[in-house]
Length: 141
Image (cartoon, rainbow, N blue to C red; front, side, top):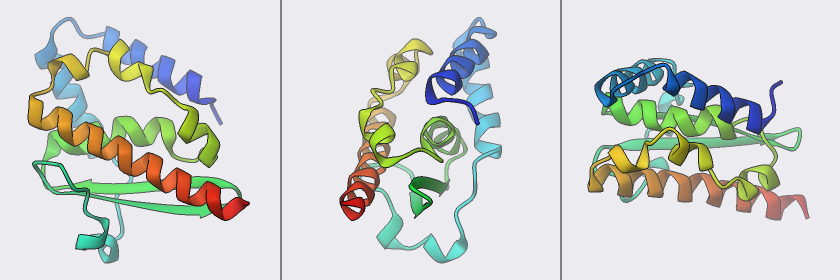
């Protein structure tokens, strides 16, 4: 399996293939179609991320010392954004998730091209992913 840094670099290189942000948005939509889908049983208020304009459900499983994420959203672009996070952070140890600064999001220019409401949603998704990691790390002790 590729390291986090390798996956981040691959994403940066994928986004460098596109010259303008309309093409990049279309690519994010394509990424949304590849999102590891959450089981229907987790599409409940308990797994809904607070602070997102659209509905986003995020579930995490923990086994063999690694965290596995699945998600869904009612907005196609949001599916792509959450997949940008899951591609890097899923199947990692809680400590790797906690320590990752997600610099690749800046490197691809995502944050500066999101509306304020989508930026808030992105921050909420990152916060929830990190909270899962912290909770699983606490269980390790």
